[in-house]
Length: 409
Image 1 (cartoon, rainbow, N blue to C red):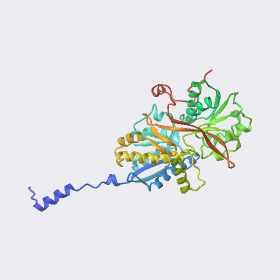
Image 2 (cartoon, rainbow, N blue to C red; image 1 turned 180 degrees about the vertical axis):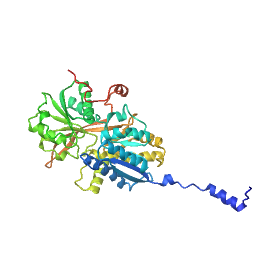
Image 3 (cartoon, one colour; image 1 turned 60 degrees about the vertical axis):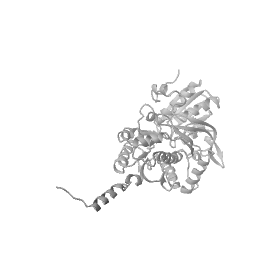
């Protein structure tokens, strides 16, 4: 059958063909899935995640590089099964463009393979070392820090500023504790120091007296404890007569919990990827916005600072992609090429393995206006996940564990 078209119909058809197609994908909101913890013992840190990211979005009117941002918050419950379920929901049901989180190392390890299979750009938080080392993949980028990353500078500070050589460690008996001790031990021993005792306590330890009783003669005690555990250990250690200096990692005296420490924390040296007293316009703006949104008594620490910076990373990434997030490989490539100088944390960039290169702040705890607070005593710039070691040589060694590195006799 032959169809005849009039000249008017032909002209109308030609005109229609030249009209731009509706840019549905380009105009639709970019969906961000935030996997966090809002219930259970890890909820405090997880809530700070959301506060930091929402603060940045409010500052930008929920619009980054001309694209509206649709935030979908999922409570993982702080366990591996919950994290995997919520990961599947935000990816398959909510059709997010990028995932932030999850909170804990065991949650990230439970979702790592799924994010890779789903080809989902993920800006991870949890510190599990191998996520950006031996088990790295093309879709997961860590913007926070590895478990050991803040312990490398801490060990250097102990050696060269405190002039101490022998140390005992007390850590939570799971991967985050093992990896922190591993990083501290490696740098301490490279500098001529030595670990003389490693003590491991369950995450739900109520009484640290049995562990304090096992502390040997040494120059310094390094505690790598999370949640409320550093509050309990520090108080009991001093109460039971421990005289050695106490030092610890990012969760020991974060600015969100430092005021909960009592006088026993006086002089506690701790290292962190963010410090409330960091003097920069970006940090002042961040603190002011957090207080505007959540009140002058809001607890501000590295959890919120990391997720505020995640907002900055997404904005910078979209600027590089022209506001597009549908090309997932292109999005991750652009993300890993971002280098920022104005985050509340200080400069932030990525190494060739997809992990953040950061400034680490060594602080001393002391009384300010009747409450414990941190004062920065030294800043270590551009700290990598390899702690100054050649990456290829580093990756030939086993991941830090309960027994690695082994203690020297």
